[in-house]
Amino acid sequence: MEAKVQQFVEMVRASNNIVFFGGAGVSTESGIPDFRSVDGLYNQHYQFPPEVILSHTFYEDNTEEFYRFYREKMLILTAKPNMAHLKLAELERAGKLKAVITQNIDGLHQAAGSKNVLELHGSIHRNYCTRCHKFFDAEYLLHTTGVPKCDACGAEIKPDVVLYEESLDMDTLEAAVNYIRNADLLIVGGTSLVVYPAAGLINYYQGRKLVLVNKSTTSMDNRADLVISDAIGKVFGAITL
Image (cartoon, rainbow, N blue to C red; front, side, top):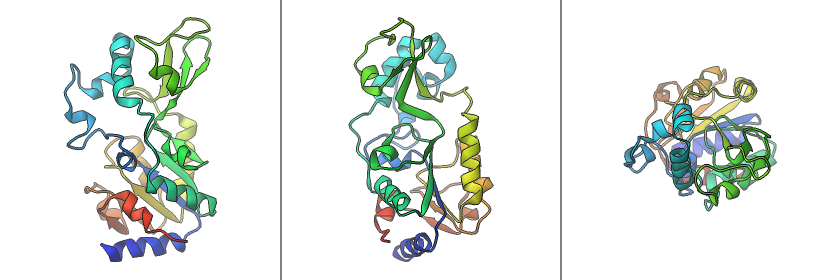
């Protein structure tokens, strides 16, 4: 494993157009549960399965229950960036990393200092009135009860997150494709690559340096030039420029 990590570090040092594509596993080391691990949200018990609660239909039909779950399980505002987030920000400041493409909605990449972050599934930190479009931060939503209402016009507030049954933002998706297509090193980390269309982005990579860092195997392991099955914070912590 140490040899693989050293190979990874050398690939990072030799590259100047790096793109990182990450999922829930990037944030689990910051204490944010993922959806599919043994302790993830899919394996906990609620009146409805999380994948149902986090759907557009459920949001429309059971808005108050959606927000009860959302406040309890999604608005985790005490989490801090881990070594993976910090090293990615460092690589961007050094001019080597061009973009972070994330499936996460927690804002930890920005908290670590990353500037060019493409959030495929939106962010808990952006919430808007459905009528007048006034902005509300996550802290505001956390301290509301029932269905949160706009303090200006009284309409419902909706998080700027992509729910099941909703489409990804096309501008964000197109930007992600362009960054991946032009990367000289694509690092995919903390994702099982099962959620589409996001997982399909890896197919746009045309280079010869594809690195997968994930604790479990993925369907793309046989395509990768380097596979590291270890904690992502530990792997990124080895990077020195």
